[in-house]
Length: 357
Image (cartoon, rainbow, N blue to C red):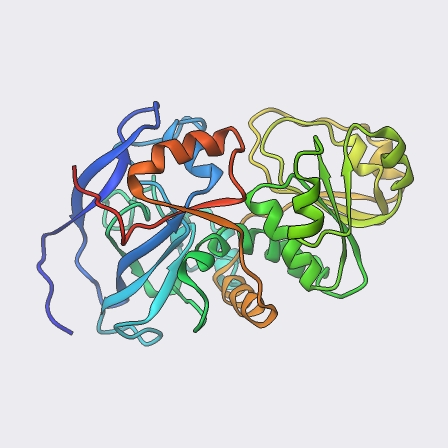
């Protein structure tokens, strides 16, 4: 392992203000510490959360900000204490790059619930420097938050699994829903929803897609393998499906009523919320009380779950449906994503793009 320069630079595409417009930005990449992995980025998926952060939808954005948390790359240097990786490994980095290591969630290997977790971007690392994401040439990450991409898995296919894939896998695993024969619903067919259909089907579930229109019916049934497709406003069909589902994964990131979907759940059924919504959601309590139904949430996944999910996807031959773009198209891709005009995940070919101005 050769000694790297102390003050090294890399280039990414950053937002400078709440317009969310990205443009080339050169910044300092920290020195590789004993537990760190220096990664040359090959590609990075685009998540709806990238829009929220670059446009300051949560009121917590700091600029300049390089987004991207579905990162796949090649290890080019490792610290002296790194044992899990070697130079040349193809690896992934998801939403997190740090945690406290001592709280109850961390002790249970649930670092995504650590109150002091450090985000891959739009956060401050332990050295006081801002974290920057995967729309860049390189990154340096603690080995705990790096995973190996299974051999034979295409890098551009692996990228969306690091957020969208594990976000679905985690609740199915945690709530005991990995067993075959269950009936589930996927509400919303975007980047997370389409992986929800694929993963649930691979677990042996009967899967119904619940959508707001017929636009994606053919894709859901033919391309993704869903068993049924229902429009939420079709009251006749919704009535037919009442009390039929063990769970519904709700991926919708905008305000919506919950009652229509609670009615689809069986006794002890679970409505699992995943969409980040800033306005309060409401429901009538009898919808939950009668049927002992559960409204719960789930947030991305742990590093252990990420590793499990990648192996599961490899074993089952699962892949995401993606559209690969160059970095100079990223602003258009973000605009299209905001309009839900993508099937089903954009992945930026970072390695094949010109990042400099």
